[in-house]
Length: 367
Length: 203
Image (tube, rainbow over all chains, first blue to last red):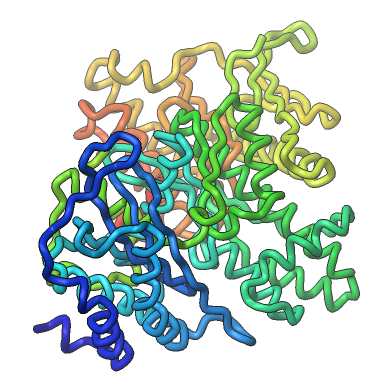
């Protein structure tokens, strides 16, 4: 089979390992899962996330109850993400996480109805590992499989916060986008022209000898300063750019500006840029909700800025709990589930991963 | 009297030295650090004034800039008392419409030949008065020599036109005719637009 020919060695080990872990659970009679609140039969979807440094397994039901949301993050001792090392990390941890997710959900594999996975965008080796895990599980349990666009999953999990039709400001290491639903697709209204904000923060962090990922350390450092050092404010229409800010920040550090002042100034500049383009997208689309997503969305200052902007516009402000902001399996499971219920079917042959999977390529028939 | 409230500015219809004028006030953004916010608004109001004046100088009608009130970040300009092109186009008879669209194209071509990017070309941002088509709202504008920026600028107009005037789609060709007439590098920009479309961005 074509898919098998592409497998890296780690993936073969992964398949064997999953088979070992779940051997006893497979091929038994199907058991219905009942929603504990409504005691109605509900579908259960298991989602596997693995686009970059985090491998996650989530289990959700049709009411978006999150039964399990396990994740493990690859954190190198030095430097940034090495794609192969990250993929190996995922392959090692995925089998046990599948088990612990099912334990946490208090279900067995027999109760699952659907397997979803992150099909892209992301790092090739990581994506392939998650996809291999999903295929193995789907084939073994004889369940339908569905590939999910990672960025869209960040938006759809907003359902958990009560938002229905938001502008999503999605800020992570690799991605920085302003996304909203318009004309039957999730459109990108603004995005970074060079690197993701998280990536920029990590690069600055690396220069300062901080560990990857550096967002939290930068946030802590920034909280100790109130002194603004001007940095390039780079907004072009609805788009933003961060590489100039990185260069300027490093230069200012070499000019002996204090680390606290520069961290403060980086946050003030970058977050204001993002809030500005988000507001512009809200005005343009006339939407009255803003949703945050992505790892950087956990930053308190970013949250404060976007909340202030939303309040001034009388718009709703929504932010998922931290576990659902970062890359996680639950959002993949939930998005896979609503796609499946809308009638989207994939065969294993359709599950090839897509490193450059664009948000606006997906035909959104479920909204 | 506030006649419009955008993402960043309020448009007031007011009096200035006895005449009816438009005052565009860039409102402070409380989410931003005050010092940064002040700086940005000052720079932007000046850039917009310069763009309006430069466009006017090369023959593209824009409201005349009358005053800049730095302390309030306010731009005072001539009030153009006419309907928006968006509302004029469907009403116009075919020959008249052809002429209007050609003029739009010529204006955009003239701006681009002078490296002026409007940044938000829509038929709502054009006002018809006294036989002229005025371009307003340069708040997203900039100067750029790049075909990319010019391509994006024109592409924004195409998309806006498509969604506002789907029944007049056929006639957009007159805009392009006017554009080519005034801008010698029109071909390069049109090629760039194909690039931009293939990237699938929605701006």
